[in-house]
Length: 446
Ligand code: SAH
Ligand code: SF4
Ligand code: F3S
Image 1 (cartoon, rainbow, N blue to C red):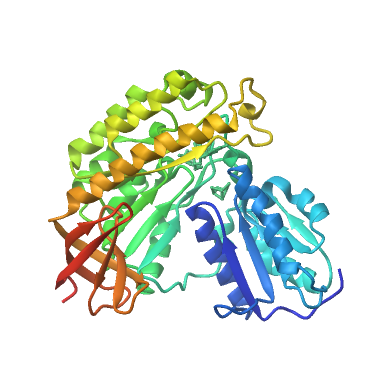
Image 2: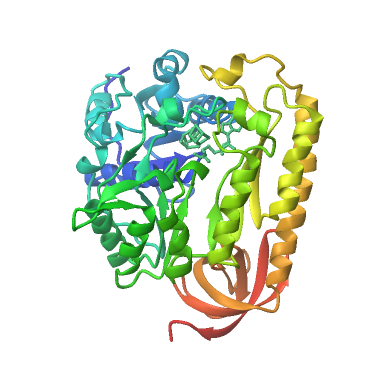
């Protein structure tokens, strides 16, 4: 590549999970330290970071069409400088460099603290790949948080040791690591000082977080949540995504003890059938999963439950799929995500016999989503007549309309005077599948 002038503006496009959103923000902060500013809405950026996801084939292939769009009909001078980050970068580093000559930098999720050095090299015309997974956490070399928003993400744990047979995450994000307790409290304080009223703790298996508290005692996520709840100004705490096998008594109990911990739990089950769960290497069964949910409902009866499902795992029979429908009927999720199985290179399930035909997967997904939507609508409808606090996150589509979240993570919109970051008490008056209409009853802030 030819040497170029250093970029003045950047845009980070994050795909995939919330951990990528967090990483994207941190990459933005690193670039800002170099004097590069976010490109104004609607304008081209000099540097584009594609922060990619490898979880399903469709997500992974997206980057090539994005690169095509960014460079179409442009010479190197006119096209933006492109960095590929995230899980596709980790999984396909060298392949990206070969397949997409317009890409200057490829940087994995554990190496992006080195982005500034890579950028210096890219300006000189050198292409660089960094997909190391250094033992020293990247977090130590990241700038201090400055993010201004009422809601913030905080990565507490990364990586996965579970090796579900369909999943790329253990390969793209590496082994489970937990960030130290005191670092997390510090970062949370910074986020609160910058205006955060709600913090969502993130991890590929967030409830696998383990640390040592300020008195040297072993702590899990439940204890961390208790400590965060003591920080002045933090009104809401959430966490995602959890694994059934990492749940402990303290975390379950926290749902009944900590007022700031919101009544919402995202606990993926993937399938309702024990043979399929075993083939997936999930190491829980349908019954143990349901028992776990009961324990959450015991301490927090109004808890909103969410989950993830995969349909069409290799060998899944119609009867086995129906067990997944049954578990949905049993749990009555407030909200859930469902996906068609996507074979991922290098994972054991990709080479299993009996891959399921696309048409069968399509049909199963549709049937599953009908039930999930039914329950989501019912959950929202049951909220009508109640009132709750809504944390205002953004303006709505129409003039004077505002959007925020209920404690149960439902989107609530209302028409009234408000500003981003307000906490308002709303009467919930009407329900749709994806949102509720509220009427402001009082200003919780007043
Ligand atoms: N660590 C989290 C989820 C990580 S991936 C957990 O275990 O719960 C998010 C979701 O993507 C998974 O829960 C699963 O439902 C889905 N997923 C992962 N790999 C997939 C694949 N190969 N095909 C389809 N869906 C997949
Ligand atoms: Fe993937 Fe399973 Fe790990 Fe979740 S627990 S990230 S699904 S391997
Ligand atoms: Fe995707 Fe990586 Fe997250 S594969 S879901 S971006 S951990």
